[in-house]
Length: 209
Ligand code: 99T
Image 1 (tube, rainbow, N blue to C red):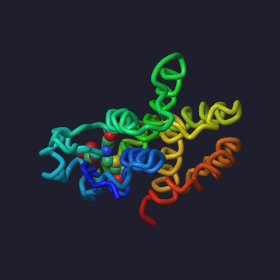
Image 2: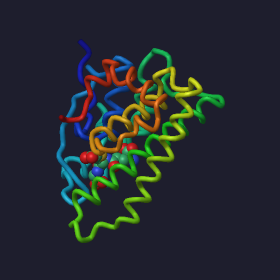
Image 3: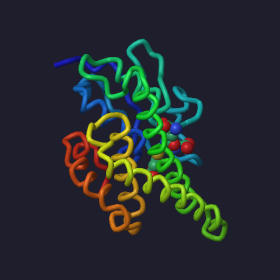
Image 4: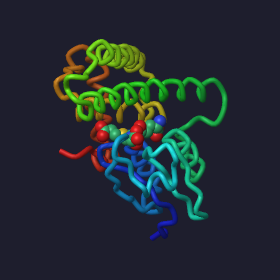
């Protein structure tokens, strides 16, 4: 049994942290990481996290030497260099930039989704800005349309950095926006996700019910 020499500050509700946990499982590294569950929001930050990441955000990964890495993209890149299997982030060539760009678009869904969550959950209802909420939702819709094309052209077959990001983004939409009904509009993406969401790494990292 490998010793746990890293600590991941995370929350089961965080899709950014989920990407990290999925990659850890896909690459066999989960046993090396202690999971430290933190409750936080932008208006109720965690001292444990702030001490390691001044932005106060999770995920943050504390290494054996006491240094901490953040954000999720940096952590994923680091962890992908710590295993001996086929890299999940292509090391070079056009595929590196293509897959990282797709992963970035998946993060755009998460960014917009988290902003919507904070606006609707944390902000007093009379202050909700509907135009802004609508604009965030449109970002999500445009990204989903692009992922439908990617699914349709077979670009999501390998469960790599892009596919992990997209799967976690879809899982987050189901978690925070169960009424969205994205499957009705993006059938190929829905079919891809039906399989992807059954991977052990995805099943073992589901957001709270
Ligand atoms: O903004 C804050 O102060 C606290 N929020 C977070 O830490 C969120 C948790 S997801 N994490 C991020 O925004 C990380 C983004 C960063 N670019 C990365 O790691 O990639 C909470 C989702 C929810 O509860 O619905």
